[in-house]
Image 1: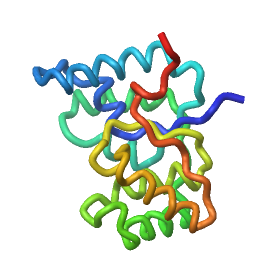
Image 2 (image 1 turned 90 degrees about the vertical axis):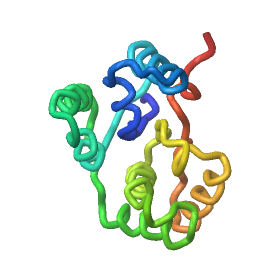
Image 3 (image 1 turned 135 degrees about the horizontal axis):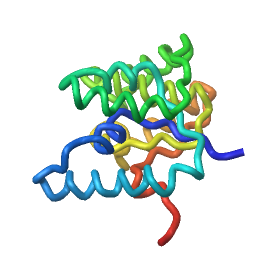
Amino acid sequence: MKPRVYVETSVVSYLTARPSADIVVAAHQQITRHWWETCRERFDLVASGLVVEEAGAGDEQAARERLEELAKVTLVEASEDALSLARQLVVSGPIPQRAAQDALHVAIAVTNGVDYLVTWNCRYIANATMRRQIEAVCRSAGYEPPTICTPEELREAD
C-alpha cells in the first residue's frame, strides 16, 4: 500500500501558476512541477472539499487548471471530528484564528489518517516552530499527526 499524501491548496497553486518573477516562488514552482511529474506516483494523493473550494476561487482560467489537476486525486471528508480538531488547533494556540482554514487542512489530514501533508504554506502549516505544537494538540486529541512537509522534502534522493 502506498503512503497517502494530503495535497494542500498551495501545492496545486504552485503547480499550475504562471512562472513567477520572484526567484524563490519560481524555485518552489519548479520543485512542485518536478515532484508532481516524478515523485507523486509513489503516493496515493488525496485532497478535500476545502482544497477544491480554495482552488476554484480567483481567476477563472487559473482555477480551471487547478481543478483539472485536483480531479486526479481522491477527495477525503471533513468530518465533525476534523472540525473539532481544527477548533482545538486554533484555541490551543499553534494556529491563529486568522488561519483557521489552515487548521482545517491539518485536521482533515489528521482525522483521515494520511501519512503526509504536503504544502508550501510555511507560515502556519509547514513551520518548524509550530509543527511540534500542532503535533502535541493532535496527539492530545488521540490522533497521530502526519508528517508535514513541502514537496522539496517529500522526495527521494537524486
